[in-house]
Each structure stands twice: as C-alpha cells, then as structure tokens.
Image (cartoon, rainbow, N blue to C red; front, side):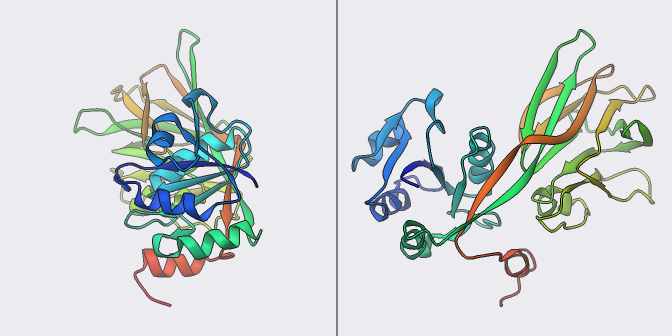
Length: 284
C-alpha cells in the first residue's frame, strides 16, 4: 500500500499535531490530502481536489472520532479502498489506533502486519410519488426520525412485503452489525457481532410497551411508509447526516448495499475486548 490519503478532522486536531506525526511516520509512502489540508501539512503531501479524493488510492487514514471514520469509510467503499482509523475523539469505538500508539502502529502497517475486515453496509432508496428516487448508503444506520415537531410519527414497516407493524414512535433505526453498538444500542437494541450478515430494526421510544427490536438477515428488503392515521413527515438520515424529508406517499426501501466498507485491523480481532473496555467501562 503505497498511495495513502490522509483525512484529518480539524475539530479534533486543530493544529494538525497528530496529522503531522502520522505523515512523519510514513516516510516510504506516497501521501495525499485534500488541497487545503495538504497546504497546511506541507512535508511533501500531494494535494488533491475534492472531486479526485479516494481515486487511485490504496489506503485511507482517518484521524478523528467515529464520525470521521464513518464518513471516510462510506466514501472509500465506492472505490473499494480500505480505511484505518486513528482515534482523536472520546470513545473511538471503530478506530483501530489510539493517538499514543501512532508511531508503533504505523510501523506495523508499513511492515504489512495488518488484516482487512469487511463490514456490510445499507442502501436506502426514497421514492417520491412523482418518480424521483433519492439513494444513499450507510455503514452504521439509516434513521427515520421526527422533523421539527415534538409529536410522534407513525411508520408502517414491512419485511419482504410482509406487514410487521404500524410503529408510533420518535423514529425507527435500521442498523448494521457495525451500527448495532451506536444509536440502536442506545435505543435498547441488541449488540450484533460485526461478522454477522444481518441488520436490526429498532424503534425509538415506541408508544407500545411490547415493542422490541427485530433482527433480520441481510437478504431481506425493508419498506417503510408514513401511516395514513398520522401523516406527519419525517427525516431520513444515513450515518447521522440529514439526507431527505420522508412524507406521506413516499416509499423508503432499505436493503444491503452493493458496497462494502473495508477496515484495517492492526491489532487483530478485538471486538469483545473493545466492547468491554469502551462501552462497558471495564478494564482488561
């Protein structure tokens, strides 16, 4: 892997201290960054316009929190490029490297001591009555939530054409195994091992005592519509980004994406130890 794209989060690394440390550790690599970042880093980093990022790149290094890694992994997946995360945030559940371990970990990367873990992604298509279709992809989750109103929304959910329920709730989360440890977990959903090929449907604060999450295989297709009983519009988000307004008459279809996120693993499979240490707050 000789061509590496450096993607820092300026809010997490405002003076680019850790970004420059990363660059200095990769002396034998051809390094790239978006133009404004490359100018700030210097040190022979090749500038690229936004339109050419991720093209002809062997590896992406994302410096920031989980949001930075999610964004980079989703964009890189289009070009089948793996991503390595360096945690500069608080939790950093998805990132492989902590900031104090940059030098040691990148030395192992240069020596080829790493593996690549594939993570399934979701595809959401929002069809409007006029025929317009908006499509987006997510590594963590697709979330249907209230717009500005504080009142609940009603969403009809079907799986492969079979009616599941009319959910009256603050919203609905469709999460991948990767996203099962994020918003879905906070809403009471189960934690899925990342190697599973399935996703989980989790209602957000449902107005029914018995409502639980449902885990479905990745071969299923989920469709959602706004209920006639309560036709308030909702917002559809992919990985925390506001993408589109979901109104009565629209059809939201969620299925497995053709893209796969590829995450670099230097420390092996540590899912359960990271789960225990970072999410449960217990030391090894």
